[in-house]
Length: 427
Image (tube, rainbow, N blue to C red; front, side, top):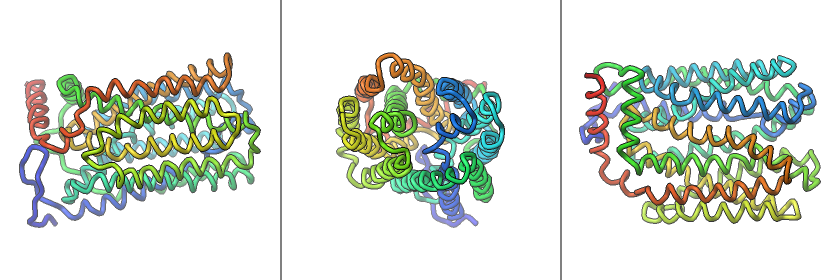
């Protein structure tokens, strides 16, 4: 039942507070933990090479195509979430992801792995961004909108902690069978779908659900008319995209090049996940509203230096320490970026704009996979880190167009304008 208290809506109107949506937050936390215990993470290259007998070139080809497919599906599926509901979109994506992981665990050969990646990419695209929108709207409807930076920080901590635990458990399971980490991860994703099924769908903020084209035009015009929002989307995508390559692409070959024993990979990978967890936890406390602008300018500069340190290191521990620092720097600003973007935009296009952000990062990662591979094969692994150092300068350009104080001040005009755009497009 809805109680008599109210909270301010995005457009300045009073909105009833429903404590039932507070239970959504706990269920979404459980869902995020279960879907991020990625047991396959520290051994996936070894699994595909040794158990599925694929060459490194074939692995990168399949992974690159998977990222491209995710990029192509990301925005349309975000629009689907805005038009038909967050919960149904995330729940469907989780089921599709479960199928993909199961196929990867049981199907042999190049085409079997490619089929698993196909489902994996589509499921991930349906989940990305939309689960964050569901978490934010649940907090708002529960009267906890002002607490969302803290809620987002807890979310990131749980995700990083789950991945850290999964990296250790995955190594143990792989000793019994290389396919077991994938298979057990699929089972955990199925349990996550059950947990998510108990959440409540946030009500639509309009009398009718908008059509696909209507929402796309509204969101596109919103970005075109709000350069600070577009700059924020680009900044978040670039920072996250460059940091992605450390644990998920370059960590294993860098440690191998430094002659680190394979048995240490799981523990070292766990350290990278814990570093991200620490960044999410303490970055939320360390970065204040008044210092956020300076932090957003400093983080890209720090990452440039750290990538160059990895490129020039001659000892594994120095390279690893720099990787840990990269993980901390990236994770420290992520809760704040999420909170700014969520507060700045109206509910009916929130998932679409979050999907634009995920799309930008996905396209970047998809393009950079072959670029990093070619550079490594041609000139050596260290030049891949030099390339990432150069790319870390790009967020400086986006930072010049950002106004980090605007979202926390008076976002009331933005939803009104978005409403007018939707009304115009619908007529």
